[in-house]
Image (cartoon, rainbow, N blue to C red; front, side):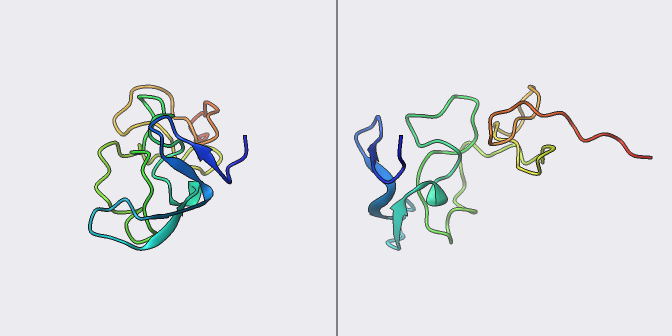
Length: 108
């Protein structure tokens, strides 16, 4: 599947070829519905229940601070990417690649 244009399960158009506005209600900054503006790894309707991110699209001002109802864990995995599971999970940390990751080895 290419990411230029596709249809989300809720009927919205998405992809970096789709012009849109920030999903913050009071913001009208132009964005696209590509993964660079997406909160989380997968759009709303395509994400797993234990996956962090609300699945909406925000401008670069609001993406890091939009009071996400499903915030990420925040722990860095071995590959230096953040764990993609919801904060407070009790499973092994998993990076955004979806591969289970171990904690870094302890070095004396």
